[in-house]
Amino acid sequence: MGTDRQVLLHASSRAVHIDSEVLRYSGVTVQRVENGEMVGQSWIPLGADPSYADDETLVATWHAALRWSQISDDAPSGAATTPLLDS
Image 1 (cartoon, rainbow, N blue to C red):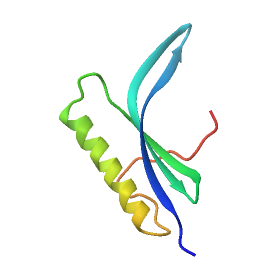
Image 2 (cartoon, rainbow, N blue to C red; image 1 turned 60 degrees about the vertical axis):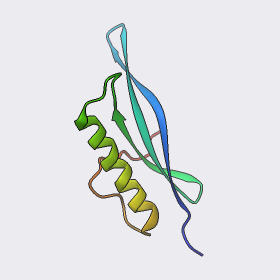
Image 3 (cartoon, rainbow, N blue to C red; image 1 turned 90 degrees about the vertical axis):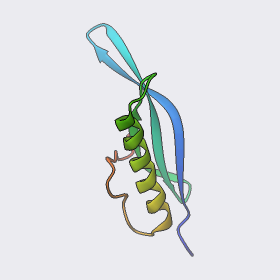
């Protein structure tokens, strides 16, 4: 039986706690799901007015994840990946 791989994009934000202040950053989470379980994710920060470099980073990460979804047993190449962590 083959491996069922999916790529999901979500608008998301991250919070950074500095002393008593909380800073929030907008971004996009690219999730990689294999056989119904999330196996990794990348978070790309994007502000209200994203730059060309922001766009290129998102497209490169998305492209690597889509390639991963089509090729079995390979991790995405060319993208920063974060192993699934409980938060």
